[in-house]
Length: 226
Figure (cartoon, helix red, strand yellow):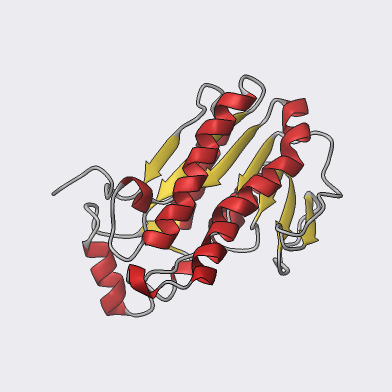
């Protein structure tokens, strides 16, 4: 049995990864700001904001780390308020950095792996994505920097999704017309599903010869022009 620390295990891709890990017999320490509703003998839960959490309760050995919180705040650049830039950065980048600081010792002790999440909008310029692209760009920089600093003890990678059908994206997929338009923008003519992103993330955690990579799982959005 391996042990994983999942920040943002309550919903979306974080929840899907938590369920995959539990279903294959691993133990999960989950941290979210609200209750997950999950019940499993191998799940230990903490309810806290990662920005204020002291790290108490983490095991001495962590085989894996997952940081799944995110935000979607799309608007014209001139419309962003300073607090919106700050919030996107804190949720996506600062929270990941603070959580990794708490987990580093246990990850090193177990020769573990870390998984973060970026977005297709970092590698490909997209209108109205300035704030999230800036925050997730910081995540990609963190991934590569820590992959170098922590090698060979700890591997660090990220998945960069395009639009995925999660609670976070519900406003963008809230009716048939919006969902159809979003699907049409992708070369594969649909949006992502949480299980597809979770399995991709699990592959990065499990493969011992991958580190410092950002894997695009985006329906071809980043590289195809049909």
